Amino acid sequence: MTATTTPAIARPSSDRPRIGIAGIAIESSTFTPYRSGEADFEVRRGTEQILERYPFEVPAAEYVGVLHARALPGGQLDREAYEGWKAEIVAGLAAAVESAPLDGFFFDIHGAMSVVGLEDAEGDLITAIRAAIGPDTVVGTAMDLHGNVSPTLFAACDLLTCYRHAPHIDAWETRERGLRDLVEAARSVREGGPLPHKALVHVPILLPGEKTSTRIEPAASLYARIPELTARAGVTDVSCWIGFAWADQPRCQAAIVAHGADAAAVEAAALELATALWEVRHEFEFVAPTGSFDECLDRAIRSEARPFWISDSGDNPGAGGADDTTCCLARLAAREEIRAGDVSALMVSLVDPATTDAAWEAGVGGRLEVAVGGRIDARDPGPVPLAVEVAALDESGPTGRAAALRVLDRPVAEAGPSASLADSPATGLTVVVTARRSQWATRAMFSRLGLSMTGFDVVTVKMGYLEPEQYEAAADWLLALTPGGVDQDLLRLGHERIARPMIPFDPEIPAPTAEGVVTGGGAVLRGTERGER
Image (cartoon, rainbow, N blue to C red; front, side, top):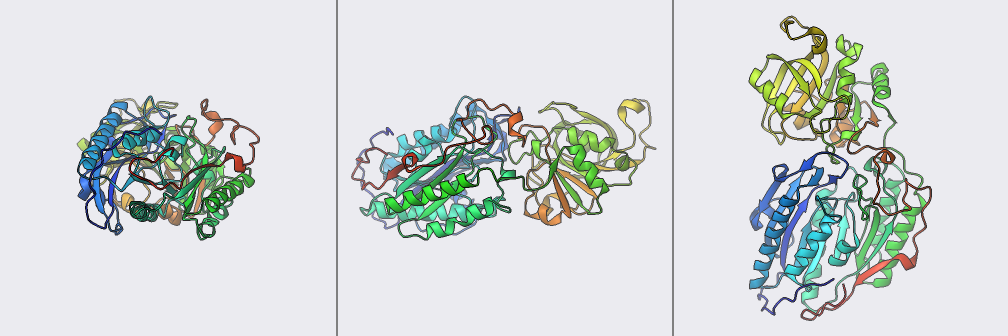
């Protein structure tokens, strides 16, 4: 990697290493029509704001926080917004190294960001950062296991780690581990020690998270191997990235990365875990029983289990879905058992600012005609016309304004505008609409609108695998293979730019070999003589 030469500047006398922090974190589907922009992000600037992001005690160091932007997964990031943040990060880091070199840099990212016009957004960003901070700074990153490790990202980072659980119950634990290892490595390198050795093995598998959850096999046993590997002499960390299935880019595939003090041990650990992944390549299954939405709804209504949850997986905003496809809503509204009130059902949630604003204008108890959803991802059936009563309103959370709407038994297309809403009886269906895309994964989200995770017979949620509180609430659960920008049926999406062969797009892939292990690190840095990275 080519990097600019940083002028020799005296280091501060403090024993604490000087660590920069910056990053842009989002998971972006290239198959959704939604475009993520500045308004979708929470942006933190400066050391104090960025360190407040971490709910753990950071290792002793002198921190230089520049900018961190984070958003709910979405579509490709607007190029102008990205370039603006990149320029701000680079300028801030360049200004920091003018006063004293950075011993380390923590690249706080997700790993599956897509930017309009770029094939490898994180690779582009870290390349620009390297040019600003110079080749002597030790760079570490802690990522989502659904991120991607491109050759560019691997070359520019000295330490890489990722989550070991899906659902991601160890997200902050992983960042703490990554930051701790970075601070220790930066201190060691400053004192004349070598860079950690590192090794990368790509495995051409591209699977959705709903097939690779660590709740079930084979992922449970695969990730359970990691503690033993990291306990070996000379190995500090071993991580397994599943990759991001809903982006059509050459970098998207599984990756194993290891780092530590002993080159041979690091390479052997990476190859061993890659081989273990390859050996179970045909064993990954969905985390729950699946079916079309109609099949799932039939089973839910017949079942005695209450509440019975259904995941609208193809439009999961937590993976980048638009959050407003309406195939599930239309079928719920038309279902006779729900329409008659014999079965209570909740659809949560659809982003629809216009309907949300109309509900607020009507107020709680107000009745109105609306057309819900289908404005971003307009695939059939598109906006669903409904007559509704406003049951609850809230604007205290990350969704902005939100409204719970009780659907009335008065199909707009049949009744016509002249029919009165006042005498229309309520059905068993409640639908939640929001001003911003959102993921309703916690009890607190539901309670904001006076709703309960267990208060309905059938709960349809725009999710993939259920998050812990949802999983606990569900008496039974099905994964509906619905259409959308994060369709679980990857073959329907039309990937064209991924590497081939690749499972599940091809029947077989070659086994990992020692010749395929990419290595790096181990050098003792002297001035700017890092050499080939």
